[in-house]
Length: 344
Image: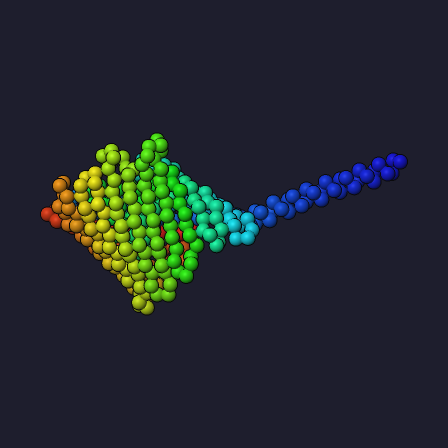
């Protein structure tokens, strides 16, 4: 009898150990299938910075060639092509150690969303996300998403409320649909809701085609949420952009317009540029011109950037950039800066 009890007890222990082993195995497999990936960019430089009509400064600046950031992302395969995941990204200012692009940014100021989707149908995302207009502008210019040196980005987003588009490059409280790539075509559509529940919101859609040597994008957006705008006003903007791989390098062009009802201003933005492979790096050149007209403004703004980006390795590069900024009837601004960028 005692032996029978001991045998049953031992079998129970074996069963428990087996169940624990299978649980740990399943947990290990889940961890292997869906690891959290940590990544980012550390960019910092030194130079003389001056925008047209403003005072010249000599200083160390973070995130001029690429916005310094740290990110965490996970994408878990749920079977049959279905997946779920999240992305959290925070801007960093290496010169001060602070988070955000400025003191008003939230901590997760770049992207902060969860998603559910499938490889065949696309994904639905909710949270804070980049707009299709920002995605296209960053993609179709020689300096990419450079906040400090890209004329296309500066003119489209960072030249003041009477010239650039309203709203941020990233929208809070958003729902977005991102399609799969079908024969080179992909779609991103999103809507941002006003936090207080008012019947207003921002909407944007972007259609991109990329196949072979050619890439094209058409984007449009309507902005009704912006603290700088008069209540009840809105702004509509659209853009067409493209690039071509010419063998020796890549050429870029974009054109956009925005009509602001709040300030009664219409702006037209044109930008062209190219990248040329030279030695162990790339020559970068980009030009942008904006004409903004309305009751409060009649402005022509031109910016030209020329730089060389030398690759030290797959993760490190150093750069030298000269940028000339000119607003009609104001003194020229000349920027000359160098820096280093590290990807991880």
